[in-house]
Amino acid sequence: MTQQHTLTADGLTLGYGDRTVIEDLDLTIATGRITAIVGANGCGKSTLLRSLARLLRPAKGEVLLDGTPVRSMHTKQVARVVGLLPQSPIAPEGIAVADLVGRGRHPHQKALARWNAHDYEVVADALAVTGITDLADRSVDELSGGQRQRVWIAMALAQETDILLLDEPTTFLDVAHQVEVLDLLTDLSLARGTTIVMVLHDLNLAARYADELVAMKAGRVHAVGAPQQILTSELVEDVFGMANVVSEDPASGKPMVTPMGRHHVH
Image (cartoon, rainbow, N blue to C red):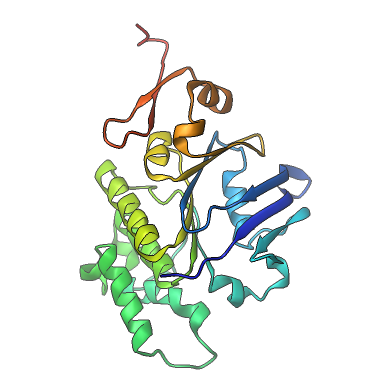
């Protein structure tokens, strides 16, 4: 089991240059649970995730890890606890799959120290659980988009953090592999108690897999809670500007959103 850490946004204002994307945002991440952040394009989901990972310095407010501002902590200290899979990661040219996954061990390494048995075991486990052991010696450049995405997830797992942040982890994956990856993340949360925060565009997958939903609108948290509590037709229309019907997902019992297009309304 992982250690239980708290991750909190306190009065966050974030932006790029003169453009403010998020203003005065407060959020406490549910420890040991799966949180999905949803919202329309441009509402600040990825910006929030980057700040939680200490990659974006707030204009105001703080991100707190166990009550300590992350910007006052050493980069490696944060990286041992918080891992991030960004939206469009770039692999070094010609790198092999196992070598890229092995880079997840960097926060745990001391200068000039050699790998120990645990490092090799963690990488092997990350390759196995993501189903890419047979790709270990292949160049990442040769892989399909879906295979590459699983390599990046394996690298994030090899970092062996207690909090895992993922920006669109199902990008480039077909429906079967999307479900497979989200099942994998659920296993990780249940078996190890890993706190998982992910940005998802697919509202129905977010509702099915998340313990908590964070619905964002125009740089603010619009609603937070269990999908069964907050995912209503009114919320979807307010956040996404989309006419819809919310019913029960027959597979999970969670809410399921059906968009109402102009040409298919009965």
